[in-house]
Length: 77
Image (cartoon, rainbow, N blue to C red; front, side, top):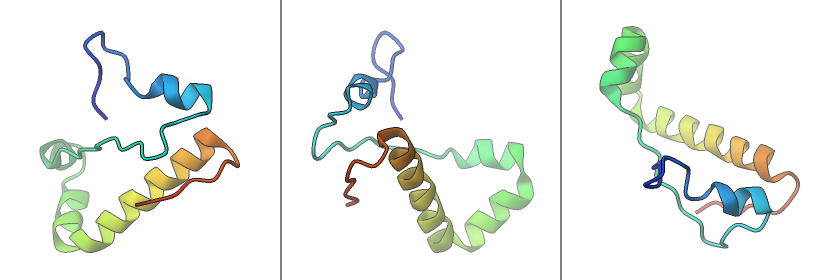
């Protein structure tokens, strides 16, 4: 998630207000060098199962969005 020029999350206000843009898209980057430093076995597993981990990260992000927005309808792209 990118930060604004003041270090704040530019999309935080939209989520906090409970009325996010209908097509709000925020990139999420996973730095594999950081993963490798944190857990070399996880790094290798991600490399060998990229499709599965792509789906797993997407599922986790979706669940975090639902938790943040509550029972409001969330559409995934």
